[in-house]
Length: 483
Ligand code: NAD
Image (cartoon, rainbow, N blue to C red; front, side, top):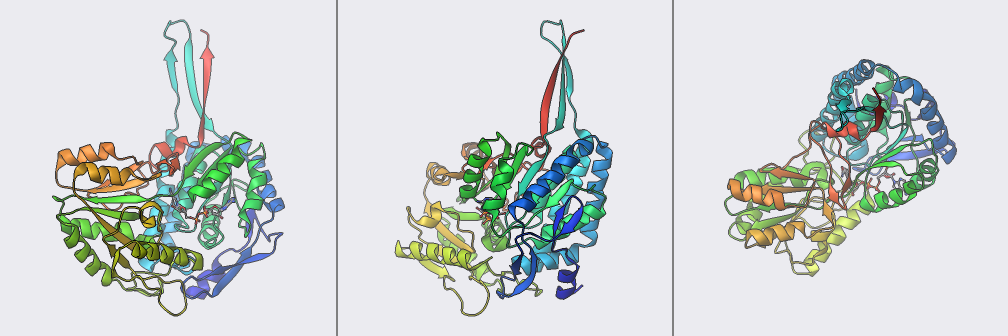
């Protein structure tokens, strides 16, 4: 299917109670970030539409909770198969709306589909326990039940995977849901909603709304007592706001928020591996990832060599429209994101950093920013503290393990950290001391559907994937049994 074909085949309306319908707030444009041109328009939901979506989720909850776990699992499994069968067209759709290169989009579709397969297997493994009271007199029965209707809010950077790692466990657990993707990239989620419907998901279990004014349609949902849970992936700033709004209703919360990953390279590290993995950790999604390596702390004995090799590898990456085979680096998502990246690089240079590569906004259409390496980055520079969300690699030297660990932990965030060393004792000491929810040990990619993804500190709480992922959608009920 070509670009026009896949756009024409993708639903552009809201999905409420099993029916596709127009939005009461009109339509909103979806743009191609590599050209700035409008690809298509999708329905724009009003607060009334959002409440209609919650009505449908609430109405479907009782029947859905009592379906057989195997049936829920098989729906997910069929949706997994359909995503894999349609990987090529889904990848093209993702690249069109988000900009990442087509190879990365293919990889994301596979990764996203794998959450559906993982949770199709978890649906039939929800269990409780039966135990004795310590006195021996009575019995303790513990059971797990679906939490109830959920609101699932996702960002634009991984338009499919951020959805399936919430939708998969919610479906498996027996929860109904209202899904709200980011307005920049609604098409991948609309296509996914179509796939889940075709896979047999009953009407009202998954409702999808898109909005140009998220705040005004989400607040009334959070205040509605029929909603029982919010799972949010996005910025820490918006996460905090939603947590406040959700407090009135005491919602169960999962918060997957911002990151500022340190990438530690010790003097004994395999430098080839550290450079190759750095490319993945830094450049996947043009650096627009919560787990992107934000800052490279490198032992002074190898810092110069590491920066040289990284500059060489990043300098050979090809920038362009992500739909073209062979392109490594696509555009950033929009003008705001690009201005923020340029501002952070400007601040680093003002404070004494040297530009080894890139650092200049190119002329022409689209929101491109070149792969950039900065050396000699001084303490206090903004991009050591703030999430860059762009293809910029600051390298700062350290002289001892203690200094490296202190620099790594000197952040309000704590999502992931990367550690490169061949010394087992040092590796384990550093891993234990890192304040982060995840660590990549001699590895630049941690994401895996079978692993618990999530952070500590201002990166949030709750875990997605692994055995932990489904627990976020289950409530524990305990029954005191008198024999
Ligand atoms: P964002 O916080 O601006 O938006 C995320 C979602 O929230 C979008 O759907 C958006 O429409 C919605 N939203 C924004 N304001 C809202 C409001 N007032 N009320 C209700 N909804 C609102 O984030 P973004 O720019 O889309 O995504 C980038 C951020 O997401 C980065 O900080 C990144 O680190 C984070 N992220 C975290 C993870 C993780 O798993 N920890 C994964 C991916 C992205």
